[in-house]
Amino acid sequence: MNNAISRRRFLEQLGLAVAVAQAPGWARGADAPPAKQLGVALVGLGNYSTRQLGPALRETKFCKLAGVVTGSREKGEQWARDYGFSPKSIYSYDTIARMADDPAIDIAYVVTPNGLHAEHAIAVAKAGKHVIMEKPMCNTVAECDAVLAACKAAKVRHSIGYRLFWDPYHAELRRLAREQEFGAFKQMKGDRGFVMSTWRWRADKKLAGGGPLMDLGIYLIQGACMAKNGAAPAFVTARELPKTWPDISRDTEETLQWTMEWPDGASAEFTTSYQQNFDHFRAEAPKGWVDFKEHAFGYKVGAVETSRGPLQYPAPNQQALQMDDFAQCVETGRATPVPGEMGRRDLAIIEAIYRAAASGRREAVKTT
Ligand code: NAD
Image (cartoon, rainbow, N blue to C red; front, side, top):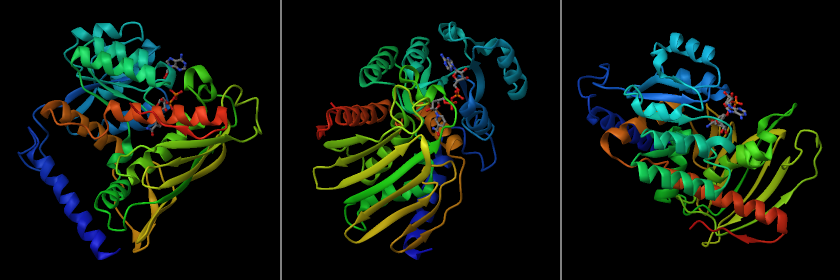
């Protein structure tokens, strides 16, 4: 590993360690548990909750699983036994309002299909609980606005499950964008897709909001905005490719190619698909480049090279760090790096991309 990069990374990690040591209830030694762990309720017990978020909540230090919202009481009871929380904290989608009287729950994490995120997040906010929402935040910008208004009215915090903010390779991408060691990133390209062999809600317009752009393309949008130091593109163009499996992608795109342009002349070319397996991202600047050669946006990112040489970092549990960070934001009042406004920005970009695919024209991105 290049010395300059490894030294900086070490210092960054040291910074993180200092932040952890200074956090409330965590100053009593590296292995001592904090005085209080906030209670998290998972809303929706599908794949992501079962395989990633539940297990991650066994590793978190500042929060723990304290309840669930599920359509199946039996499933909820199994989760209560497995994770050791009270069956009193099992809710159905119709009883989220009752969480208001549950002191065990501080945060509810919405992990249902995209088209239900707004309804569930608003119910959580009205119950007075802080909200984490999975990506994409909602189906539309209008829904994002309704969630942000509900959180403001209820005086609760919100964040989006953009777990890659806690991946060290993506942190390095953001650092390079911020400090411009290679100059400003000017060209980006990438792709993200998987093969969907049977119909799922992810290809349903109402439940998913769209096709792979909503589910997978959003990662490329995130990567590009990281490389542009948080700036949204000003213009987009887009083109839907012919469907190879129209029975699966019935009313949503199967494969979409799009471009994004920034006011400083930077541009990006991306592809997302439900009929191809790929996961790459590359950003080039005048004095160097970063290339995520495989699993660019996965749970374990790896094979990242730069013009200075390969990067090699330990693989953290992204979701555990993400949830712990939000719990600390709630406790300390600090701002989250992944607020609802960022989720809304990404929906504004997605809406512009869909407009461009429909019109065949270059469309402006309206983020405000
Ligand atoms: P899933 O289909 O496995 O689970 C969805 C859950 O929602 C199920 O428990 C289902 O019972 C429940 N549900 C409630 N009402 C429903 C309805 N009307 N129709 C269908 N299901 C309903 O999906 P998943 O993979 O867990 O994805 C859930 C969310 O998490 C999505 O928004 C997805 O984009 C997001 N996700 C994020 C990541 C990530 O890396 N951040 C990874 C996977 C999924």
